[in-house]
Picture 1 (cartoon, rainbow, N blue to C red):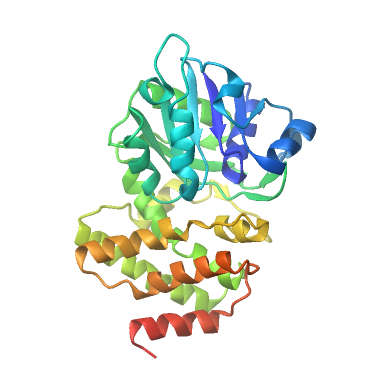
Picture 2 (picture 1 turned 135 degrees about the vertical axis):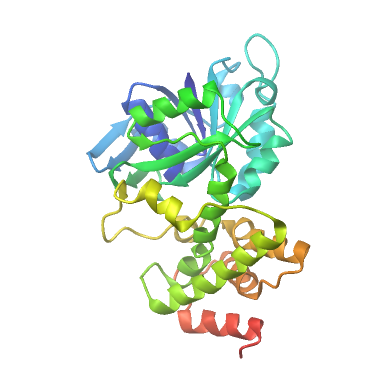
Length: 333
């Protein structure tokens, strides 16, 4: 199999680099200064094993690769706000022997949130979900770090519509050889909905900074309670804290001093977008569909998007001010 990593940022480059180090064939898809750095200087990936430079094929579009191969695996790791463009571009790519990527090739959605699988299933016949537990940092072109031990990350895998098959088990075996935990599960979206609850704090971290604070934890808890209420109203199941702890505890240990998560990094790099509409916004959507109030998530989504529109640096807001806005929206003020 050849792995085509569509969006070689923090998550994509880490997976791609580790697969390449394990002897698997990998193509990195990137754009702009990052693509240029990858082509010129290679991928500088730092893991717990140390720094290694991976000189891998880099593409910005499918036609740069010619016809795709029947054994290609597409790993979608762009942020959800960029998913439609990537799915349309790569889904239309021709595959050697006939047909398109959307018709013939497996697509793995390795992203936070739960929307990409729905977007992909409209276009691709073979869609798999990937629940990420992979802290990684990408703040300058060509340079990525993922420092967890003893595993670089844990990636729960399964068919997006439920179930599993031989192909995803083969992919999981490659990922395990590359230093990841890769459990194949029959209910991957149940894992992804649980992960979404934790990602509701991305907007808090992006706007107020990554430093731990009891007030930030308290605000996150309020956002999570809204999410759980929305899930219950919608009849959506998610894995319990105990199930997640059993799967991850002691397997993915993050060293102290690691910088902020994906939304914080988007603001720090000035990407011009953030994924809050598909994290906190997912709870807002479910709340509106099922009559559940979600004022805290509404405020967090709105605040993160203001930071993007105003090009504010991450952490420029105090947790006191953000909490006050949530209190007001919730009727506590």
